[in-house]
Length: 326
Image (cartoon, rainbow, N blue to C red; front, side, top):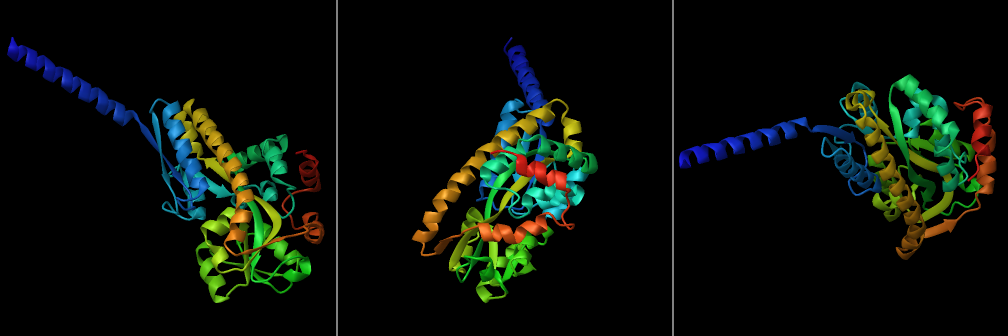
């Protein structure tokens, strides 16, 4: 009897182990790659989404997050997304524009009046139409947009008017959207890898750079620049994009993935807006000169270029964007 009882226990344990093994094998693991440091709110958003996805799918899916270009630089991540070797990525709007030009409009200077205007745009029919056209061209699905922050110029002198920009050698990303503002104000845009900017500022290779306040803080640019000038010339955002291979594989669970990404991004966007307000005081406490700027002259300098022949959108798209109410 005892031997039979032990055998039944062993059989039961084996069955239980088998069920657990099958359960573990059944869990699909997704890969979320991005180029931002683990200390950033964007990484926190990805981790939050991963936790929500696992809970929403009762453990059927787990999402591992790889920050700081662990799965490749942004170009490589976009390529991997199309191949399905990466499931989800953060990417800049300029990268979306390489597939469908008009969607890059929000990354151009002064196309957005404010964070509220940007938020209304992201929830508008106009953006939905452009996201669908991007999907038709690339195959990828934009799950949501995350606010990245208003971009401001840092320098070693006050920048209070467009004339203060003349001749300034300013680092920008290597994309037309980011080079328009310096060109319109007489500065010299200098494309450079993000990882090289701190040293270039420190050594005087460039005179200035432009980024949102949270980025200026976590990249410590304020250590090598005496002035932060609140030009707010670009209302920046990141797209969270999902591979078509992933959504096809997930079936009905794909909508849960899209929903969890959108929920996590909304929380992060609100956090970044709040941090922007607090950071002005923080920088001043650190001894940095933070200059309030009359943006109107800068907007007037840029305005003709936004309606020129070199932009990747038509006049109707621009007017629809400007007609969106906050």
